[in-house]
Amino acid sequence: MDIQWRKSSKSSGAEGNNCLELAEHDGEILMRESDNPDVVIRTTRTKLRAFLDGAKEGEFDNLA
Image (cartoon, rainbow, N blue to C red; front, side, top):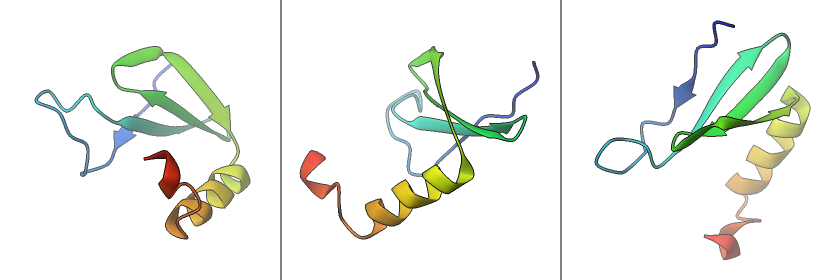
């Protein structure tokens, strides 16, 4: 399976492994942590958009 993972330019860590990576495959959005790449979360564009909109509005700021 050839998946092109993308990570934010804001990723940190000496090796750039302190981040989430995203990819699109077979109509799904895939997410994984760069330091644990064997665990993959699958979601839809709609659900990812709802999460990102909430994050932009500060709904999860108390978790960071």
